[in-house]
Length: 115
Image (cartoon, rainbow, N blue to C red; front, side, top):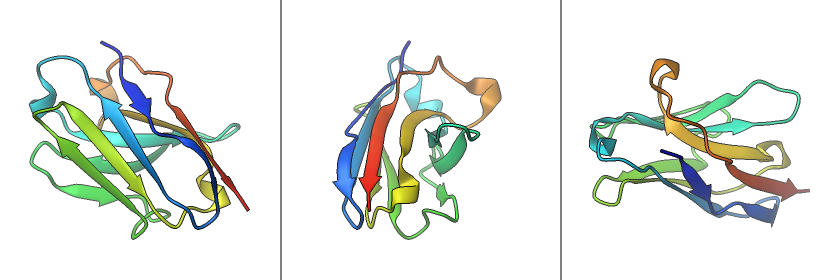
């Protein structure tokens, strides 16, 4: 089971990107999912969460700009990012919400926002 995030790229400040993540396996509907990001030299940051019931939550730094969603039938989780800032530059990963439940981490997808 390996998580596959995609959709990253290089964008100017103020731009948008849409990330996708495929979650292999048959138990996706039971998972609370999340997007994380890793900035070199910093700890991994929880960006957004979507529970199995559809409740969402966001880090203060992205609230109002990012939207997480999920498609249980396709076993995918999405992150729509708007009004991107250079501070959003990071490698973005998806995984389950709680560290006790983590699936093997995928390679993530690089997001670079130029000023």
